[in-house]
Length: 182
Figure (cartoon, rainbow, N blue to C red):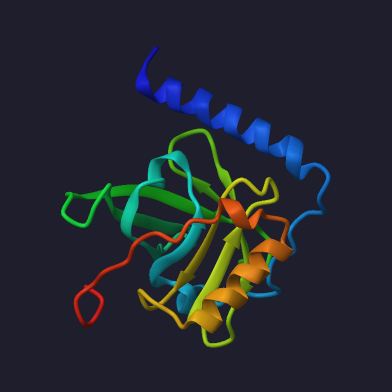
């Protein structure tokens, strides 16, 4: 079996098993509106329930670029297993769901699967966000800076738990950047 078929089967099984738990929970409510141009750019992953590809991510950063066709080119960069490891990248495309206020996307890492992506929280100044999924299998707490205050971190994690995620599953990926974040 080819690697892409193995990845598709694995992803399907993970989604199916997570759906059993999430079936008892209401759908996650997205934010009312996302100003896409303002949302674009670099987001540091502050906390996550990671996919299998990012379980050992150091310095994880998601960068969004709005394309002319309205889709979003995403680049996820990280070091797998340590700060001294080579930078890895995962590229995908976000397809904004019509009439969602730009807050619900289908993200496609590989065809034909589009994973649900819900902007469940967005700070008014676009400095912090929570991306969630109805399946409650993965979540990402992100900020425009590689670190945030403990009070902000605690408040964001409390929001994630209120969405129906288990606090014990949340991982704080290591972030260590030189001054200026790069």
